[in-house]
Length: 492
Image (cartoon, rainbow, N blue to C red; front, side, top):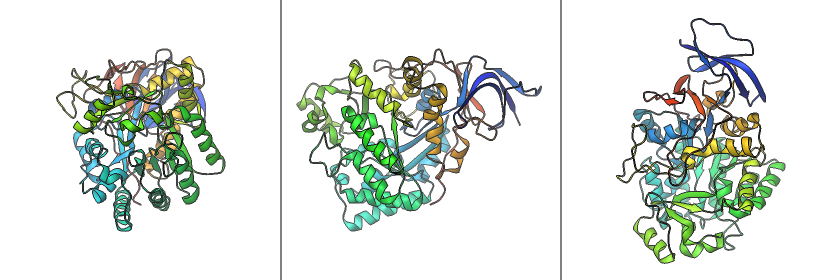
C-alpha cells in the first residue's frame, strides 16, 4: 500500500485544538501517524510541506456543485468533501449512482429533497435527481401551497423512503414556499427527530421583511427544535437575515443556551444567487427586504434588471434562470460588519452555497481544464473558503488557524456523526483519520473569483489530498484524479 510522508508542516488538529510542526504519514486512504519527530521510512514518498499549514480538508455542507468542473474549482478552495444538504436531490439512489458513474474529484453526498417530494405530490412533477430539475420547480406556485392531510402523508412518506435509502437528512427550501402551513414544517422536524437525522433549512421570510408571514423564518427553526428535539441547521444566515442578522443570531443563541440542537452556517459575501423566479424576488416583495430590481443581476449576460417591468418579463420567460442578488453593500462598513458578525458567531460553520457552473451553450459539465471560455457562476463557488481565511485569519484576526479549521472542517463533520459513519473519520488530523488533507500557504491563501471573472480559482492551496490521492500537487491539478467517494447516511 502506498505511503506518503508530509514533512515538517504546521499541522492543525481542530479536534485536539493543537498546532504542531510535525510529519504526517499517510498510508492508503488514512493518516497512520502524526509525529513531531521526523518519520523515517525509505519506502515512502517524501513531500516537503515546511512553511505550509496542514489540516483536514474543508467540508462544505452546502454546495449545489454536482460536476467535475465545479468540484475542481472547490478543490482549489481547499474543499475535500462537498455535500448538497440545503436543497438535496431526489431520487437519492439515482443521484448517488449518476455521481459514481461519472466520477467525482471530491467526496459527495445529498440530503432528501423536501422541494422535490412536495413537487411530486402537489404538482405532479417527477424528480430527476438534478439541481436543474429542482430549480425549475421554484417558479411553480402549485408545489408552494399547503398540503391536504393525504398529500402531507404522501410526501412525508417519500422523504422517509429517501432517508431509508441513505440520504444525509432532509433539505428544506422553506424560503421558496413561505406561505405553506407551519404545521407541515413541524411534521418534517418530527420525522427527522424520529430518524435521528438533521434538517437543513433555507428559512422563510423574517417578520421584519413580511409582517404577514405565517411565522418568522428563524424563529420557526427554534420552535421546531424545541418542540421535536430534532437537530435543525439554519442555512446561510447572512443572506436570509440581511440587515437583521444581529437579531436572528440573538434568537439562535437563546435557543442554543436553552439546549436546543440548532446550528448555523454563513458565507463571506453580500451577494446571493438563486433562480430569478423565486417567491421573494417578485417585484412587489423587494422593497420590504431593502432591495430594488437593480439589486438583481442575471448570470451569464450580466444584465442588471432596470425596473419592475423588466423583472416581470425575465421571471415569466425563464423562472429557473440564475441571478445574483445584492443583499448587502460590501463597500459599506456597517454591512461588512454584519458579514463579519455572521462568520464570527460562536461555532458558525463556513458553507459556500456553491452554484452550478453554467455556459452559454448549456453544457452541464466538462473535463477540460482550465475551464472553457464563457463559464459563469457565483464567485462563492470558487472562493468561499479562501475568502473566509483571508478575512477572518489574515486581515481581521478574529480566528487563529485552529479556529479556522474548526469552522471549515471539524464542526461540519461533527454535524453528521450520527447520520453518516464515514464522517466520523473526517475533520481532524490524527492516526485513523481519513487522508482528506489540505496544505496551504498561510501568507498567500486568498480568493480570486469576482463577478467579472467568477471561475478564477483561489490561490494558496499547494497540495490537496482526497482519500490519500493527490488532486492538487505543487499547485497543479491532476486531471486524472477522481478519488471522491460517496458519503451516505445509515438506513433510517
